[in-house]
Image (cartoon, rainbow, N blue to C red; front, side, top):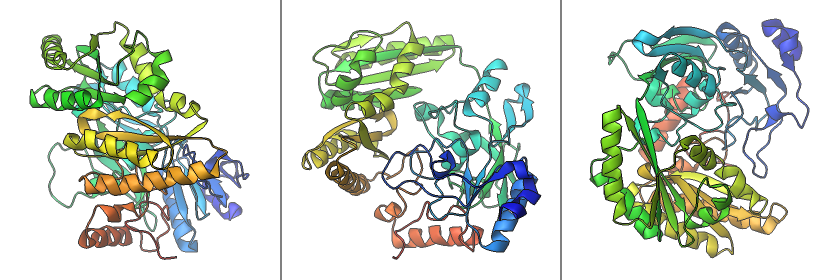
Length: 456
């Protein structure tokens, strides 16, 4: 295998990974979420990616696309062996047109570099998924990654105008492009957005940008209770205010992360909202005033930090700090209709408590996106089993509330089959037929994003 693949991309770009190789896993830190690739290949361009897929299809070898490896659902794990195709060498900037608010970049360009290029040209790339230094734009598109500012600006896919991709059995195609209006055919581009490499391998993306915002204001609002905080979210939305971000932090998380907060957290705070508004200087000022007025009714304390960068660094660090509280955590990314947020948080807490587990939650309150978490001792199989049982019950809960088992981190391996909780049979069947149409041999990232659990 290695010799034949080396003929396609060069011997220095093909290797058999050691068992401990990072190419056998991604950022998912859960039991059993590790694979073993037969080979890792690093193509240098879209044509080489096409040649690799053609070889895999001809030899019935599974192919797992990989970006920065920052995924949290096992989406880049070679769970059935085969070839891991890492796109890290595809780092070309094919087009940058500041006057037209757009760029075209290859899949291996980091999210941070996309953001930097936009900023240096007076523009902004609105999506802000985590791990920007390591994550790559191709992976962000493949998972339709979200982030705090998706409330106003949408997830990554909202800014994709076209994709270059390799489809089975090895064909390089471009779907979409720079036309601002195009309803000529089925929206094949958006089928690839969020498909997690199960329909094709994205090699380049056409991205829309925006002029940089003149002003941004961030407000921390602490409430005594979860009920007050969730009600405040609804009141902000009902008032017609359009925050760029509206984050929530439940009381248990506040207690864990308080030491890193760049200010003083009230001792009796049981919930917090972190709100941001932006736009022209006049519009941002007006939105800030309206936001303060609405939140004042339920606020314990409101603060407007001068160092917003420090505030966001604190917020971005929650994952590591919460993990350290007991040594490990089991966390799921789910969403519910925003009016059901309080109910979802209360019922999740009870789900974990029945199993003797400490739970906590934070997330993107404005769109009902919850990072529902239980804290565990990583050496305790009993706690890990209980945590996984809690998360399974959580999936049933969010489906019953009209939500989604996967909000912004994708489905990957961990949530494969869970879609059956929220879709009816006709929709599940259509999902499976789309997969078969794009990948008739089932070789593209097998085992991921399945509509229902496979028969065993």
